Length: 238
Image 1 (tube, rainbow, N blue to C red):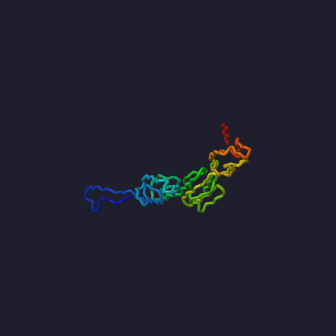
Image 2: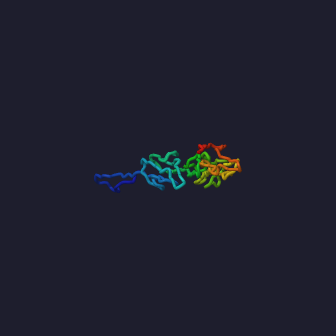
Image 3: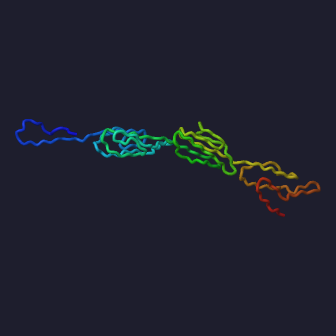
């Protein structure tokens, strides 16, 4: 751009040297972003015409259990009209602007109590999405329910559907199965009755009052039969 002459002209009576003065044209770049760290920084910047610029923003921007991910930009002037990356290069030739766009993710923490598992690992999920988590108990255990941030969730059987309208922590709870053992003896003694034990518990039963004498008749325990469960019959000792 022409800015003027370096002398004032009057009557020229001798050789004269004059110099025309020029300055570079300047344009503004307006940068806007709700998250991340931008380069150039958020605000308005002045740049010389023809400057090569590379605009960037840090992504993702993680804040505790909320994460913001840059989905691209919208540009005006010398900035390309739109894009889906966290950087853009351009040559500025007129007043321009760039607005960085963002999506939101929330952290879903999936935990278990007891022996069992779930089919979804803890992680980031898009705001507005629904996450289905199914619980599977280990052998000898059973599912008893969900706890944690379950407000607003749908539960159907062992499956919980969590709407990701915020960060959540949910826990699948399992309890061990318990079984009964009914002990029967045709001749009494001190062992008949019903026992209850957790799945996997090793039981060792005996008839310490054998033989049982009934008048002139003697009853001797020679072993046992167990139904519904594997067992080991010890070898009688003399």
